[in-house]
Length: 108
Image (cartoon, rainbow, N blue to C red):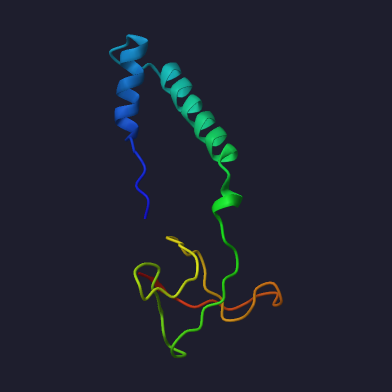
């Protein structure tokens, strides 16, 4: 799984205060900071090329009917693509069934 740099909200707020030259944020400043962060995250999310990294619909043969493990790494992986996140596993083709049932699974 890819590791991305992370920053806590508290650290981000402290950096904002130091750049603005403030010791604390007033209610108005706090609202401005929160709205500014939300706008930037929304823009980054909307500009990210999700479609290039999202694979929809890969068929996997499960060993048994009660098998609940899909291996996503190593030599014995079940997936043809290098996916590190699986959102859903359907019991039937979701493009052909209106409300397909889903498996409960563990992604390893």
